[in-house]
Image 1 (spheres, rainbow, N blue to C red):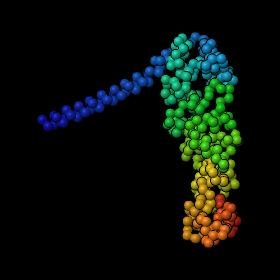
Image 2: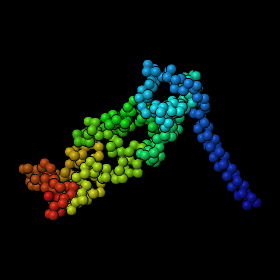
Image 3: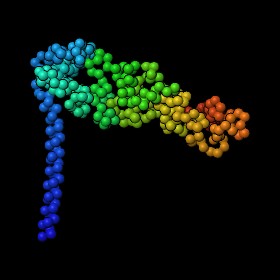
Image 4: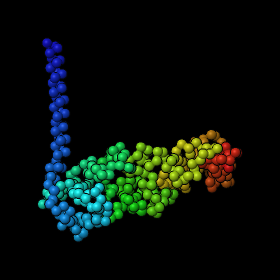
Length: 320
C-alpha cells in the first residue's frame, strides 16, 4: 500500500510540473504571435509609393532622407530597395496603410509592439558580419538595446556614425561618461577629435568594457605608443593595466590620474619614511617635518620622472 501511494505521489507531482510547463509555453507562443497578428501578413500593392503618400517631409514621420543612404540603391541586390523596399525592414504594411494603426507595422522603434530581439533580427538579417559577429554576447544585447536605439536609419548621415555627433548618441544612456568627459583633464571627445567607438566596440567584444582591442593596454598603446616599451626597467603597474593609475575618460587631476602624487604613488609605495612622506602641513616649507621637496610641484615625479619605464643603465629607480 505504501509503495502504491509513493508512486501516485510521484505521478501527481510530474503531472503538475508538466502542466505548469505547458501553460508557460502556451503563454510564450501566444505572446510571440501577438505582434504578428497585430501587423498582419499582407504587403501593400505599390510598395514604397504607398508609404510615401503619408510619410512626407511635412508629416510627423518624414522618410525622404532615406533616399540619400545606401539602403535605397536599387542597383545593389543586397539593399532593401532592390526587393520589398520599405517593407523589407518594416514587414507587411497593408494593414497599417489601410487604417493607419501604428501597432500594425514594425516601426523598429522602442515603442513598437515587437521586442528588441525581434526588431534587431531585421537588421541582423543583413548586418551580421565583421564587427557585429559578437553582438549576441554583448552587454548591449543583454540589456535589450535595439539597433534603432543608436542608429537613425532614415537619416542621410547617421549621427552615431559621425565622429562629432556620435558621443551625444552614447550619452543618452551613459550619462556618467558625459560628466567625465567634461572634467578638466579628459580625452578630447568634447572637441570632436575622438569618439566613443575609437576605443569601444558597441556591437560586442570579448575584452573588458567592450574595448576594441584584446586588452586595455593594447588599446592605449595604439595612440600612446611611446609608453609601450619594452623597457630595461619596467614600472609594474604600467605593464599590468594603464587604468590602475589613469581614468580612461576624464579626471579632475592632470593627465587623467586617479589621484595626485604622492597619494597615487603611496597606494603601492607605503614604506615608512621616504618614499611615504606624509602630505601634511608639517612637511610643507616652514614646517617641522622637512621633506617639502618631495611634495611640491610634481611631488614624486620631481625625481622619478620616468614613471612609465626607463632604458637608462642606471634607471632602476626610474629617475633617468
